[in-house]
Image 1 (cartoon, rainbow, N blue to C red):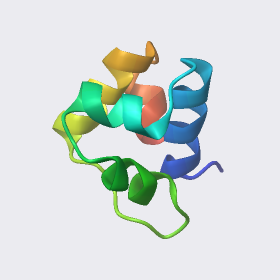
Image 2: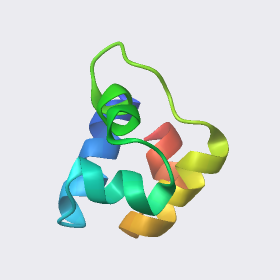
Image 3: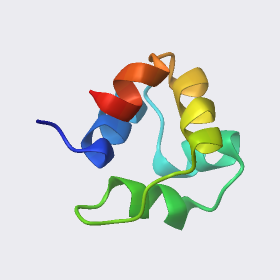
Image 4: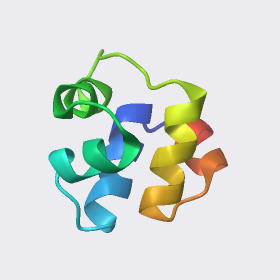
Length: 66
């Protein structure tokens, strides 16, 4: 099963965005995106998950549950 951080990274890369670009669009610091994408890192809030999904054009369900 794919970890949430891997799905965030895949969505970001599919949207051809850097961590800094995604962070700017979601309204967080780049370090937050790095944490979300790291193994054992923190998880974004549901509000930020929705913003990530919208920004990267993936479904919220896929992003949060796989």
